[in-house]
Image (cartoon, rainbow, N blue to C red):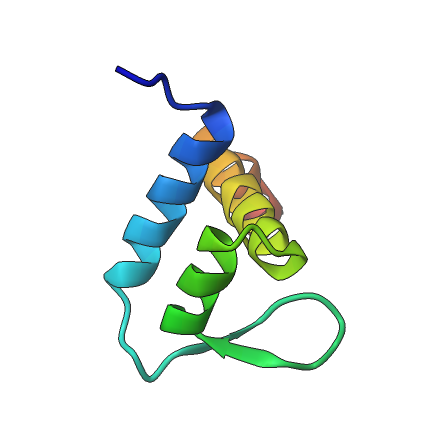
Amino acid sequence: MEQKTTLQKEKEVIIARLETLSPELFFSVGSDNKSFSKNELIEEINKNTEVGEKFVKSQFEFLRALKDGSLVNALTA
């Protein structure tokens, strides 16, 4: 059985999170002012584009900050 890399596992987690969201939601990634639907973002992630990689990275930074409490600390400071 093929062993998954950390990046593959992270992508799966972020895609699973996206799949739970409403299709009416759109996201801006980066500074190019382009919006992406959840399905477009899933496609970007699966294609390993720069946009997909940035989105996965930013979502995992958010999840880590939520887990370690730094997000709550920043919001309540």
